[in-house]
Image 1 (cartoon, protein in one colour):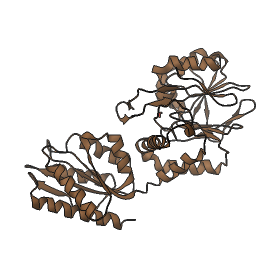
Image 2 (spheres, rainbow, N blue to C red):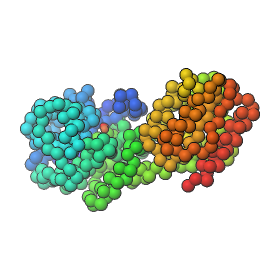
Image 3 (spheres, rainbow, N blue to C red):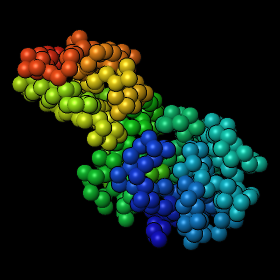
Image 4 (cartoon, rainbow, N blue to C red):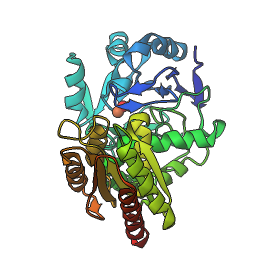
Length: 399
Ligand code: FEO
């Protein structure tokens, strides 16, 4: 069983490590390195629990809680966010601490009862509200759409610990609790993938919230999110990374995403890549059926130009391309170029569908779609190379 961890005087991590998690948000998000669900206890004149864990880990979590405090001695329970990976054990906690004050954000007044339909009295708080717990205050900062409307940060004065729930988290199971103890490449791979797949659509809100946080001039010794490790070594490094990521300034690179039935569209993809390389544009070719979609989206986030190809199948794109097109819109990528291509037999509708998806996603189309009937001939492949060169020239011209 994971050990509880004292993170400051009378402040404890009492979360759980989910080493085996491989899919999250239903089946939507891959979590190659598992995750953690972090919860914290602050012991003072008033005893506080900040967040809980996902229900399947409730028993282990309650054991951790009991190691630190008798749950009936909790005076305050803060639910920063209602998504069940953090609120799932609330009913069990409230059963043992029926008199605890349950603190939620203003939007949490709707979402917490919406999840649990329980007869709990809620204490709603807004940005700047404080609750004194003895030698410290809890201060609250609403953070709507980071990443749900009800999301909230809790700041612990004196210890200067920001508990921002999902923000600044990582799906990263590790034996360690702090950022300076883990492999930095792994940590940043997971922090970035988390941002790309969860927070990209809310980048404007991320920028504004960080500006607001900075303007509050709160000293921050530690950022203790609800997933992954706690940022104690230079904690503002992840805030700075979020500021940078939220700008969505892609690199001069292309990602060529395709699926194929009989290799015609694959050969086109490879020839487009050759054209990009010939013009000096770094590029990557990704087979949509054989590439984890959330990892693919990390490559999409980084690249200026996204080229998508599919043969026409049942009068549309191949099944692996459809969710990619959906995510290009849903994640609201900014500052992107797009282009479409594919081979076809008797109907080339998929290629026009892809271009429409790219336009709907707000991508600037850099060149007309490129299609090829049946298998590409050597002339067709030469056209693909020229098409790649044109894409590269446009991408390299862009700021
Ligand atoms: Fe929005 Fe980790 O849940």
